[in-house]
Length: 272
Picture (cartoon, one colour):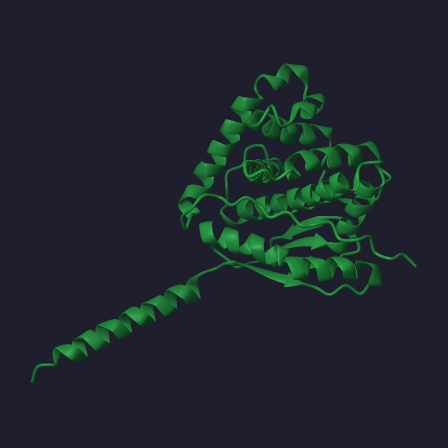
């Protein structure tokens, strides 16, 4: 007895649906987590970033373009240190509330206008977050990085900021200004600098990428770059962008790399 055609079609549809479920189960994404801080001064960061869905907006854009071999958690947490981190064992990128707090203090205590202070906060947060995401991608994809994971992570963060700049976001220049100020005051309490070995040479590399991408926008960045290097910066940014494009092309879901959303600076926490 032959099987009715409608039964064959139904079975085929069922098989297709099961295949889709299996594919979804095998898919790995960036996911998010906001850990409630125990220190009351940090609640403002917890509340504001959750309200803005800052991490979700980053994760959603990255998930649109990158196929991951493992799920990665983007989270905020109280860490005991004013820094950010990538932990390979747990596949976790963390922005510490202490880092946000130190950043806000440094950006707000250098005589800059409130609007610029907010931009410096956004730039500092965005650069550090995408730097850790860059470290995660180097590890997860086993990327060949001859100059080291730190240099590659800086480059990933810089080209991401450069992409955002094309839409008018001021975070790139503000990030340069922030880290320039922070490096001038090693006692400001930003442990990120020492724990990541982020020094003047690393800042110069970032400045060269951003200047090379848009010299008119980053005229002030010239002061951070050795004079003999300035003319090469447009070539440097093209080389960096091309290298990351080659590294990620085999892991793409489609679409260009996203420009990062910039978090707004929260009101300073009330100090006891």
